[in-house]
Image 1 (cartoon, one colour):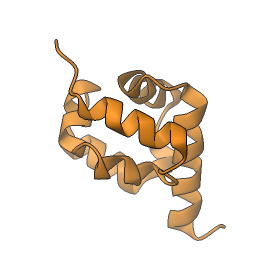
Image 2 (cartoon, one colour; image 1 turned 135 degrees about the vertical axis):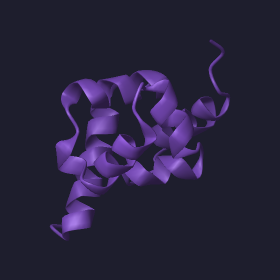
Image 3 (cartoon, one colour; image 1 turned 45 degrees about the vertical axis):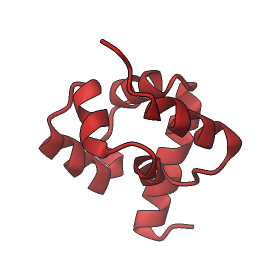
Image 4 (cartoon, helix red, strand yellow; image 1 turned 45 degrees about the horizontal axis):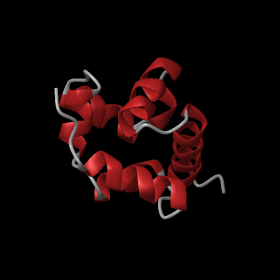
Length: 89
């Protein structure tokens, strides 16, 4: 399977600090592409994006592998997104 080139663009944005929240990743690559490549059903993935606390470490690690970034970068973005969504910032 050939990886979508937009993953590299998103990776650069993540590493350079242009992405502050998890959902901002999808400004660079559509969520249905990420869902498919990470073996999620799109409906389930959309639910998880609205309920960030429901993600498991394994799911976050699969997403990190798609973007070829370390897991802590994605965990950090997910934690910031959850705080933002619950207004705990």
